[in-house]
Length: 336
Ligand SMILES: Nc1ncnc2c1ncn2[C@@H]1O[C@H](COP(=O)(O)OP(=O)(O)OP(=O)(O)O)[C@@H](O)[C@H]1O
Ligand SMILES: [Mg+2]
Image 1 (cartoon, rainbow, N blue to C red):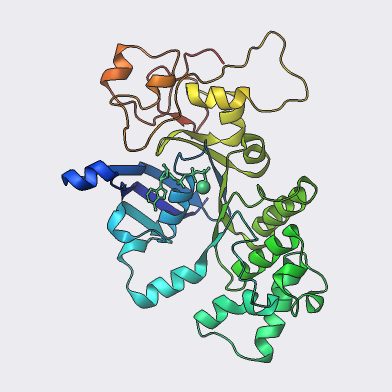
Image 2: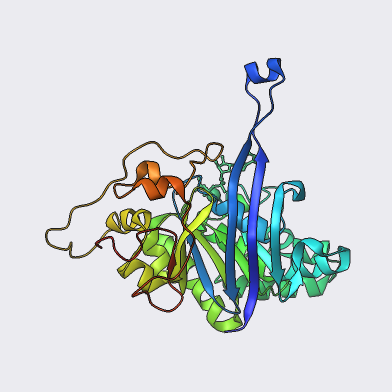
């Protein structure tokens, strides 16, 4: 598969907001290491899911891949079709903005209520100075129909408040499609929607990959959905990818204790006999206080002295399928 996007050692450190006392004492502010150095590659037409609990850095990753984070806070590199995204000057950046789009979680907030569907869908065309008049309307209708709103002519003159959540998300998708992108970051695109319309949106995104060869970074905290949707899964913990590989391998043979805990809470049709759910002990982690050694150590039942001393690297391991890597000193030897 041809590579479309490649991030190397990508990191985002936000300045922590100073507390009241710190502010008075003039103490140095800390850094929120929202993303702490990840390598990620996404092929043409590939769907890669980013999975992990709230605050682990999924949205930050998506935004950093698209150069939507304040550049002062970003380290590392992102290449798109071989070009250095953070080194791009205006004309190239404009092209990139058209080729790489984002779909947000909440279709109630992401659409301006004062704009008609037509205005929303063609907004990227206007920003890029690409079309005018009649042509805009026709292109909007096509994009709406491709997003499952048929006939598109029946939607262009409506306003967001006249649409259901699922329809709004389809309008957001139409707007993301209008510039014919090659890559979309879909950030929890169905988690705010009614269960009854989720499957339709998921099918739509999958069909866009099939029809248009679109690649996706599909952000979700739902491992079942990642399994359904993605070719590869990257499991994130506290700003790092701790396990990555083909979806089937990561989910049927997870190697990192954190992935094991996530897989354990996946709903199953037939629970495996004699299997106990391993719930995670300890506090939810804090990205301004990342532990030395293995960052998962405080919540890990298998941690040893080695884990306190040395940070494990995301690497293949014995018995792993091709492309399956985990960042645990004991990967492959923890019972699944
Ligand atoms: N602009 C910001 N300034 C400071 N800290 C931030 C900023 N944006 C995110 N963070 C922090 O960075 C960490 C990662 O946030 P991020 O939004 O990427 O997580 P997430 O995995 O998308 O979580 P969720 O599942 O809740 O959406 C969190 O601790 C968050 O509080
Ligand atoms: Mg998020």
